[in-house]
Image 1 (cartoon, one colour):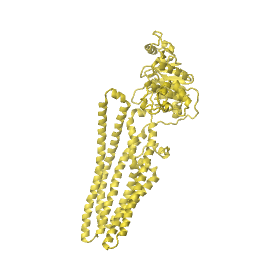
Image 2 (cartoon, rainbow, N blue to C red):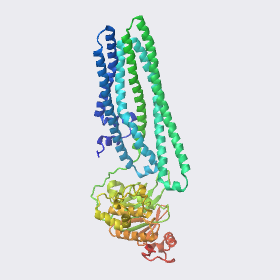
Image 3 (cartoon, rainbow, N blue to C red):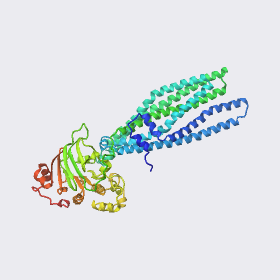
Image 4 (cartoon, helix red, strand yellow):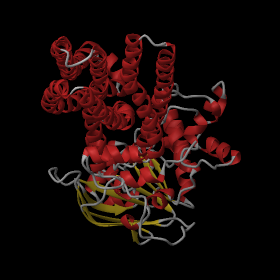
Length: 601
């Protein structure tokens, strides 16, 4: 597959520019093919411009009684040559248009995938998909044929006017009046087309967002019998999109109709005035016919100019929406640290960390501080909403701290190159997402170069052997959109296996046992303890039975760290932890579950 064009990469890293200038820069990358297509289109237009003059010579030959076979054959040759050249020029420009779209899409994909998590959290994915698909498609013609047609049609229009001036200055004045009227109309209509197109594309993106919302919770929608309500919501969006599209169609149709009507009116005026001049003997019939043919020919460049200007407004609307992505906050994969990565377990420390998701929202963390250094198991526990999962988001740099520091091996995570930072971390999310594709592709996502031996070992460790044996195609079996063909517990184990296959220095597990039964929870506990011998493992846990053997337990409450210690120490010294443990029958005052027994009970 071809690599992204470096010129496009540099272009999309620049600050946002005027839409017209940006449109030209998208097309300029392919300027050689644009010139070729433009030259071919121009030559095709020149042959059309020559046809009225050649028709005049045929008529003059008929009037003079001479042979007309030569002029007719020459006229036929010009018509055929013009058709061939015009078709070739159209193909070159269309192919170039597809190349422009490919370049823009490649770089837009890079921008979208590099978005910061916070940006995606506040945006509508369906609208972003619309910008990648529908909006980039609008650039295809306008960035190539639209630009070249503006140039070639203008040149051909000027050429036709020059020939008209040679044939009859009087009739030319009538024609220029017509062109002026068209120009005034376009000056009024074109801005409205641009605004209507941008609104239509935005409504299309909204419709895509609603559909993505439904598919994201498809079973919930059906289980709630909410199909009718969701259909009505989509219908409202579809009607709104229709209204915006009709507005674009209305203004576009009006522009074409006014241009055509003005040309036809001028034809009648020229015919009447020219007919009078022929009757008065100041103009011969062949000149009038040639002028009228030129006037008919003039319709094509004028209509083309109108259509190109309309397309230009459509393209500028698309450019504005595409360039809005440039204003979104993206991750920078670079960083300040250049030393080689260590193989030893990672050292993590948080110091006086405060964090809020948005300046208008309350703080989630109020000075969180704790350390988890070297090999061992650290558990984050506490009531829901205490900020446990957010700790992982700060370590992974999905978000940056509002104040304070998160250090990995003594270096602030903001100074690490993102790829190097995340290459050392295995992360198991709470909802354990899997992607559409094969089981192998999901397992090797974070470790594409893993060997077969490593893959089968992690399958065994994560207790996925039965799943692999059950699937008809084993590791090569597709598991469906969001892993719909496997159970919730199996999806969770796939996510765990994916993290372990990376051989991370720091393993983050967020509620990794939430969808596991007692037997598999016990097995996973054994996996965590085994990994903790050589890796820094940090888990967020509501099931305290999973982490009673942790080297340290960090108790969090309302965005603060209230206590750190072992299970026994916290049961003895922290009221909140003692209440949590008592609620799960893990205190001496309640029927205790012996070490390891929770796995099988």
